[in-house]
Length: 263
Image (cartoon, rainbow, N blue to C red; front, top):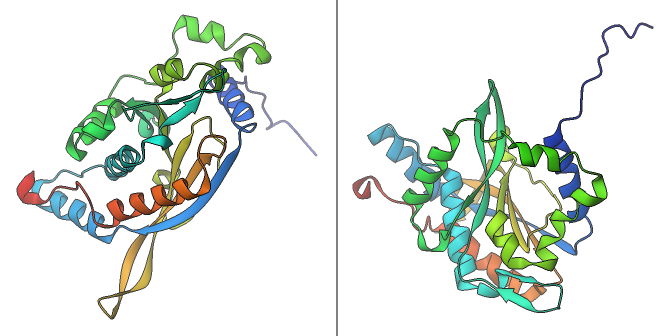
């Protein structure tokens, strides 16, 4: 058996950062909920806007908007414990969102923090995401960041302890809640479960078509699969359930999604 087609490639510094993040996140008290919401109305509005204006409104922006409004209604979700055991509850909902961009011809997801999303419109969030997608190589690391990622692993992983130690610094660096997406890279339904360093993370899965009774009639609807992850050290089950219910209500009624006349 020949191994002449095998190759050895260097492990990139950015991947080291991912390894550090996942190892630290795996030590938190994460609880995952797998839910699905009817997004037929929201998707129809997006399609109508595209047909009338030629512009495709970001579905991710809509989810970020609904998430921020739901968190604003349940502010104790937007909180972190510090090293002294106190709970820091933030007013601003800063959403760290994974956006899709192209670097060197390859599609990839990169993080971007939408500040004060609870005070923003879907259109405002959409415009910021589109601008971030067009930014020159958002994955480029500064010289200082490259040097930091070459430090020993146990030193690098101290950075990801910021949520437990200094919540304000974590907010400034990485936001307060997170939205990540695997649905942007594939088709069909499905959930993804991932550890996180955030008190709240929403993972956008796929969208599938299923039958549903609407006003007594069976019709085909579009359902979004979401994984909602909480830090159980900060959020109990009952508040988490109420938050998820509120999030679902906002998404299913296409809250904040503009019509063509409002563009």
